[in-house]
Length: 466
Image (cartoon, rainbow, N blue to C red; front, side, top):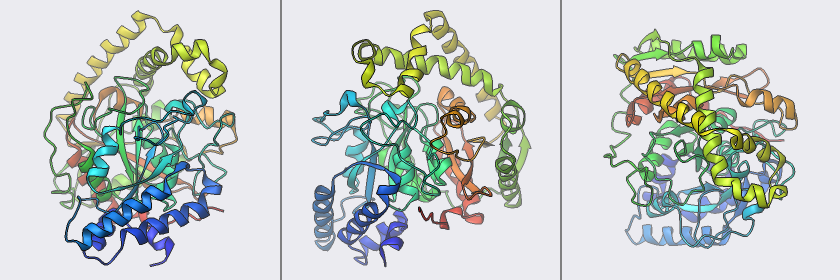
């Protein structure tokens, strides 16, 4: 296989080939490093490669396989980490001057779990500063770019993770999601991104943005790969006070069972009334729902709280908690933040305690409303982004489109939500949708997403950055 084919090899296929000794972990790792060398001058997905250690880990994985010992379900498969995830002895900067020289002493739990599953860390991936700012050009490292067109935004804040996976530099990467930051780059880059139930994946060792909204999530090119990755990183953890003591099922057991007999709610007012979507995005959603109908699902229109109410509550919680984390540095080192980051965090200074408490009370009401809604359906389909990715250098358009999305409600609610591609715009930029489920029912979300993916397999398309 050539480097490009190896770059777009799925986790499932790579794992099988490695286990059967048909593919060397060293061969795969070196191919992906070569692809990064070739493509990353255009995409800026990596903030820091760890090539020597990656090759050493691949050699150890190869030796183990030939010694008849499998290290775990992701044995020999490379991965990358958003650079807010701690790695022992390897710099974690949060893409900021503030932490430019930060070298953690311990791996984040999610990094440790992936390594324990046999996966090979390739390096740290670009983000928006502290997972909040936006594509900034006044930081020590440039922002990541979209593999489908490097002049366009790859989504944020897990921008490097989305770009690296979409471009075939990595088969999997970790992102974080506080207001949609796994699902936004998944949507913009045409890959699969899961924000699992709050507490499903430990946040220990990941720099916080908003304590009650932060999630850690897998980013892959296929649904099955995403389920395999979530399997590896899920589980309770004493290091994270919000970690859920919930059993972790096998997310792949029913993933190929299809949607016949399932009840799907189509939450169309988000993109038709509350925040009218680009016409090509709206059509792709209708087309995707038609696919699921044809596959045997019972689809009905459903309604929920207006998007503006949900987004406002999320914004108050996020900015209040983010400001509490950053207020000391903002007072002492304001010039070391990018302008975009300062502009987004500082409104948190003006959120009152009453505002915050009111938002938390509203969240509790919304959660009860959502439970009632989900008693009638198995999953919900709705928009992710309302627009295809805009140009990265158009500050006004980035600002206009960034909030035009339907992802933040599900951080507020804490339920699983997955972004999956639904095609391409006339300009060749990815379109997307969300599949949203009941708390701790990621398995059904994956089942529905996989049923759609089997028919409309957008993952076969490969970007050609130029």
